Length: 440
Image 1: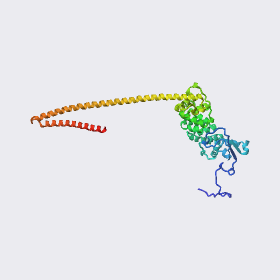
Image 2: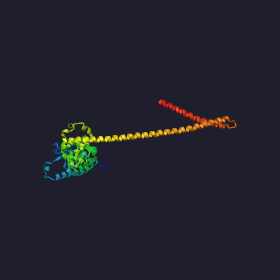
Image 3: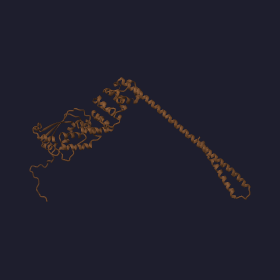
Image 4: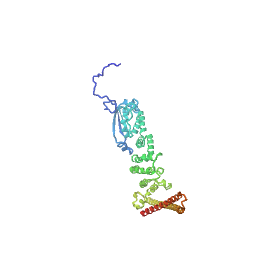
């Protein structure tokens, strides 16, 4: 049962007013905002190679943004901020007098702050508007302002989103916020997938983060491919490379071999950055020796030029150029010896093939002669039988008619069969001779 209780009849009601939930995005006067948060970006103190990749135009551009919020939303409820709840309870702080909090944040955290407020204002069960770019910043904000619900929610997103395609972004962002958990996991993923994504990492990561990936125990990359990535990093970030960093990036345990195409560049760089040269360690430990060994694989290019025409010669000391030319000569001699061995091996194989064919041919000819001899013997026997049959036939014709008539027919038939055999052989020999003449 329902009762008729009448209609709403407030005298000054405005039918055109749209009922909207209380949001920080509303006009401050319309929403009766009672607190303001002023967010400023921190000054730029580090190079951020990933800026263009993540969509950030740069850090520390001095931008300041004000957010008109409500204390009840920030300090009460399942999604409250422990930071603001304690702040609002303390009336003696300076912020309480002006109802304003001024906070300096990194650019990505400042960009993620609207999503942070949206999460606090939203109903329980609503997920934060997270992306690969703002995930680490939101995780930082959740702990900075003490919002447990946001921390759990963003961690669930990162669990799903962190993979080989996104790990470099997480690594760069985690280094900004000193998030060691995210940094450790993203470094490991980058190292395990380096063979596939090494070129992208060299282009987008800061040099020191790239070093962390290369030096990780989980690195999986072929040596020459690694050398190409390291060379690309050194070309794109020359100011970040010093001798210590270059030594770490080219450690012989990770890079025992260097690709020929970047060998001279790394050789020049090792001399320019004064990488330690210790002949006691042996050639395989020494970057200079590895570069010279790789460069002289194309020994013809080295030996066909004069010392003044060697690429990068303006930064190669005389002793290095001598080592380079000497290594090229050794490589040339080695290749000549290998070619001689190869030619000798091929000649032996060719002779063996010819000998095998000769042997097979002689066996075939022997079989042919043997078959012809067997055929000759059979033909001789048949000829003798044929002669005897002619003699028998003549004797039968001289005798009287007392002999059975079938005997004469039998002898005649046997003689006919033998004659057909000789006639057939004669025709085969004629056809064979004709065929031979046509072929000639």
